[in-house]
Length: 631
Image (cartoon, rainbow, N blue to C red; front, side):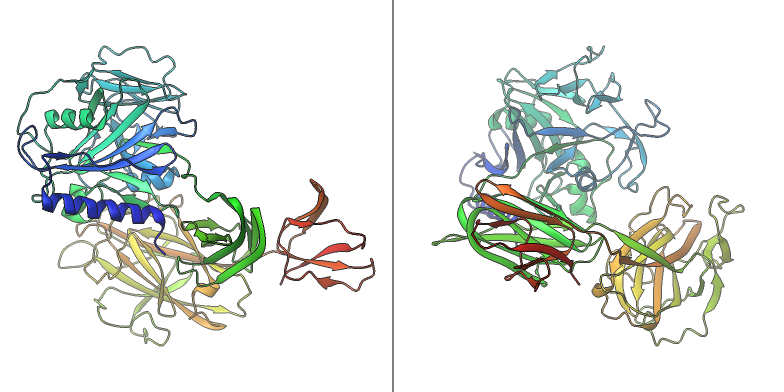
């Protein structure tokens, strides 16, 4: 199922391609298409010549600053060991920043250091120029990044073309800065030049109602060449701005929005992604929170429990209710329905696995039409008991020979010729290995041909399950330097900093924390037992391949602990009250509602199965209700 937002993006892309091929006009400012409440998206382009001599593709967001649901966030300051002017923030890609802060849109902002292209996410960085995040001063004003845009707590915007010496920051709630103002009071401050690059620029309308967030693509001949500062001012004015500033561009220019399942979607074509397939890690970001667009189906809310969830929503007219759900957007687990026609809807999903992500879609139908929402996701809670299967002292078989094309993860693979050792296994070619890594019990050899560790090491071990409890999960705690792929009985279950299809010579795409498998850098993940159809009662095989991030990195580390996590039996509760002139019965937890004509029964499940809340019309017949724990 492709959600409606993605359909809009595709439609805009087709419009853009058509516009480029037909060359209809010198400059084409694309229509503003609503994508969130208070946020519109536009794609524009031009035919080279005239005012703008180069081919350019421009993605812009127009944000209504008067919308009360719009909130801004910039990169937060370090919580530990913050030092103004040197150790200020943690670097992330724009997509990761959006996910980490549950934003609806995000883009790169201020210049920053170090400005190397692909430092791993988590690198400590310094922002250049004044930055505020939710009332906290993250970075001080700079004599080089002098153009500043500030917002108070109500999103009232002020543009300071030259903020050095710095202006007072009383009342500033959000702030970003760049190296120059390009547009002031509708006047282009720049002169035309051939210094062209991808650009990120911000603008605001004369009445300060609209903020414009603009990404101009570049360094991609035949698609978009890039823009000069003069071009940036031209585009800002065409889009509706009267004042604007330039912030960090180049490979950093990345405009990302969230789809309804929380997945980042890049709107523009980043030159870094076009060049390497990866977003650049940047030190400064600007993001926004916004509510979904109003539609026939509104106010969608998921209230998850450990093995159940209640999905609620409203409709503009009385309609039926259906929820499709599953571990993917194929909704392979089926659907629940309620044909009662109403404006307020609530359906329960049962038999779920704790601490697991579930995708869902709601549907409502009137007499004449069916409506469907976009795809959404929720995560069940984890009221569970944890039983350790093996800890970091586990013994492992290991190999550093290339196993490309060999089915080495299978249960029946013969690893009798492999080396073996317990605990955390490691290789370090430095004179003094990192003393902060604990439980280092087994040293592995490095590659004598390079003087560094092998790029890839392979590991196998076994564990025994006496049963597979319903709703249970496998919980992994991995200490890895740098990337890894995990398998159970031959099936891949998880990847960490490693692309699919990795072979022996594949380098990891990054690393966790500071890159060392210290006790405070554990990678934890859970896999539902039902998601791994290869899991068996008896002996199982866990296999892991660990890859180094750099062929000249001096160390590789691996250790793993495994738990079985299963739901706890919990008390359930029920309340009965009035909802207008009707009776409302509500309950919590995974339970089945039963009714009886008398306290001593006979008790029967309510049919069709009831979901909380259940609304009843008062009648002369007296009924008793109770809950029983669902299986």
